[in-house]
Image 1: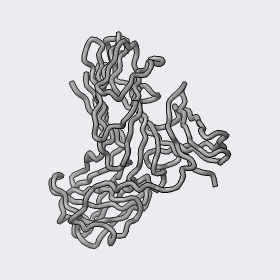
Image 2: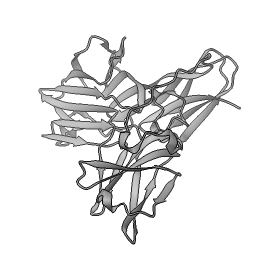
Image 3: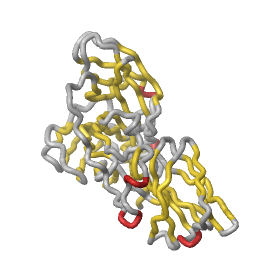
Image 4: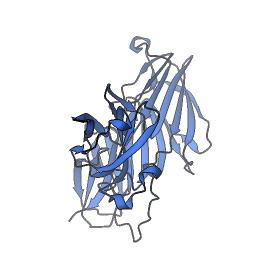
Length: 351
């Protein structure tokens, strides 16, 4: 049996006159966990070429795993870490592979029963991420261009026989990092549909499309979002474009239509990241879990006050700590149980 879920965050929402449905957009990473029998588990990690990130490196993968007795990985640039309190973890030793890429990890447990880990409180698989945002990412105006973060993902893990939950032998989890564009309703006029009401968390430039069959889509117009909720209308009927409508993210911020490609030549490609010159005064260099805390490592300038922030996928600051570095390397700790998944970290200079 196989079970697949698409939890996390999806880019596109489609609304039709007969109802609405979601359309899969950019998947950042897919983790497939499979119980092979006799205590053997396979974890296949597919890192996708998500266009919202020009760099997306996964330096480590950890799995809540009990009674590990053997393990292997199909790539030479991954090393197995010393097991710690019922977990199995691997670290990338060198040369981040180009995306898309697939790595397969095999782990053997003395337990021959299994369950689906919840994906909370590190009860599952955990990846660390080092990301460079593309210009089209809606968080670019809030995040720094380079951020680090983590995500916790449900997966199959070994357990005692009494804890087995009857899950299928194969489970696939899709991780999406880009927030939802949610169309709330279509606006009806005298000539049919003449607008959309939607929710989007940042000022962005979007493309409205229409379809008759959910397969062929026609570009209708560019429009701007005004968070948290936007209502866009026109004096022309949209019904000629079909019965289904969706929104695509084009760019962060309000871009004038004169600076956008013609509607018949729209390409959904990420902008090339621009290297910013000058010395880096402060930046997040990594994060790791340790004894129920998330340790966030900062490269900083001695005596320069800064604020270390925890952000969600919408770029909203959830928590922060102020620190005055006494060395060029500073570590700040956050309570792991109080953080979302995924979570991102950045360091900003105090005014």
